Length: 362
Image 1 (cartoon, rainbow, N blue to C red):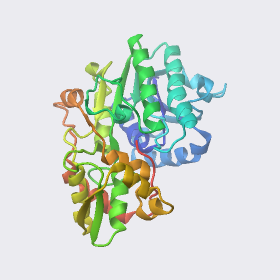
Image 2 (image 1 turned 180 degrees about the horizontal axis):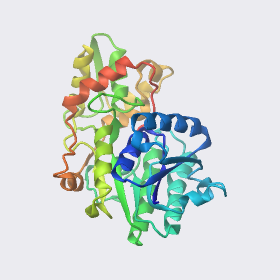
Image 3 (image 1 turned 45 degrees about the vertical axis):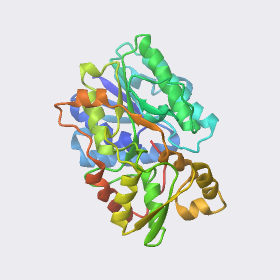
């Protein structure tokens, strides 16, 4: 019996992706590598998936490990679970804009290097699926094509720079003959059909900022809101796209930008949220550096609900080519929904679930 290995379970993407992969692969079982601190959550999440998706029952084994450790931190008793692995899904990463350099490097770069070491040792490996991010672009001005990586860009934080370094390792392995596919999600938001999410970040910070203001809300224009586009994508499209693309012959060796090919401008994003929240917006031109300084004042970030690290993404100079994604998904029925068609659902779910904590950007 063949197997697939997944890192990053029970994360936001991995939890939704796992049952989809198994549904498309009858007879395949899965091994989920999980850190000790996430073990209880992983087992609880798996039980929920098995209850909702009976075809998953008995096909998943959760094992203790760590992508940054030699041999992925597997015990000698668990090493044999990798013998039948023919497909590796590497989703594990630190998705925190404030992460320190050492932790980001250890998990995102060293972790990817360890996974590549494992892949080289698997005699039956058919493909590595590596989940990167659109934000390997850093501060690149203009369009980043899917087949581009090093365009001389600078980075806003260690999250971006280490995800870049990780993708670079994968591309070098591909050049040396490793069968792999790279996926670059944008900022992943909730399900476009239900609004359901496990985390509130990215555009949700903006929604929190608007909710905490009076009916007439003041929004700083840190860049031209009619020019800057916000690179977001609903989770269901990312999952649907990876599920379909992963079994196509043409996807081998390719990189896919999994994001909205026609993303909303910052003004469209603000207007959609403001309308749903019953706010009237007044735009105040305010340079990014000055806005960052204001938000960095004591207690300001907590009161506003808008982390200083998120501000840069409302002035991002980058757009993303999605030619490979759009072309290879043509005829599958998988398309990215328009933001205006699901924005209200994101806000409704957020309002209805105040228990959700802010988390980091994917």
